[in-house]
Length: 387
Image 1: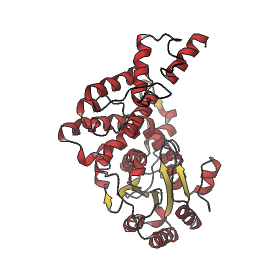
Image 2 (image 1 turned 135 degrees about the vertical axis):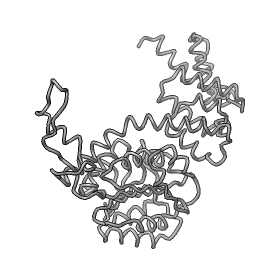
Image 3 (image 1 turned 180 degrees about the vertical axis):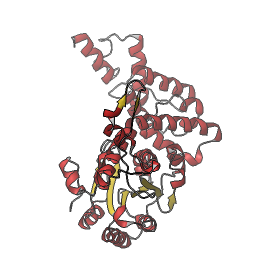
Image 4 (image 1 turned 60 degrees about the horizontal axis):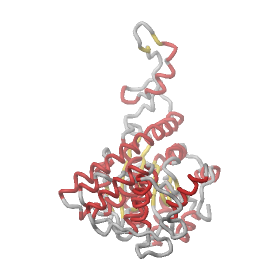
């Protein structure tokens, strides 16, 4: 990097500071980039940075700003700037305008904001909001669906092998691999001499219950949980239940096939009653030894703490594989109630934060009944004290 380029970058970082103004010549594109940064990060009063800007509630100005940041910055940076704009400049109401929302870059934080605004989104904007959410869902599906399927199917295949399966029980991936030597080039097909299935019974092999805290701090976790819930629910060998909770419990299992419907069924905000949620989930445990229950919560309990711990202990004693994720987010290092986390860990319930990339392997380990505390420790994941 030469001196001219270095000075240009420092100029964009520092803004029109008296010591830098005039020393560096900015191109027209650089000036637009500088204005976009100043509108968001300027102090607005001609302070030491010299940046002045602000979006000032002007829809045309916001529209241009959204267009500029998408033009001049990479997608990852655009997502950070949008998140900062919502938090620093209180753009929530402006994001309810369809012409502005359509220009936004879909990301987990933006979708979390839209979910939190779900009840006040005007009708004219609702379809635009759904399209933004669906664009993100499609992006995440492309990234996460195949790794999840591969990890979970591998775990299930190791659990049960059936060489005389019914049609609905066939593990097609394993069957194809086992019969590759029977490929007939002239017919471009494989003769499935050996069929491999998941199991003899028609019912699912494993039950999965996802209990997701939908308090305001858990927005990213709700978004990712909806993706994984839809993927797990599409696998015949699993029976998947999807439960959201704050001070009330909402069972959205009927909408689990469409993550967009799941997300618009969420109502972020409010308090938290983990005890009530665990009791509800416990009522849907029919085969404890074949059930994996994932509680996704920061463990800030607003309900009956003693009851919460008793229910968690009862679930463990019954044979349920109970796991507590303090967050399911890209950061993986959440704020949480350390005391409750330690109490859960003392019950031998694994407690740690998890990133979306780690979740498929986590589910595979849980379905295989591995020691999840050891599993997390081997991967350098931050465990709650007591694990």
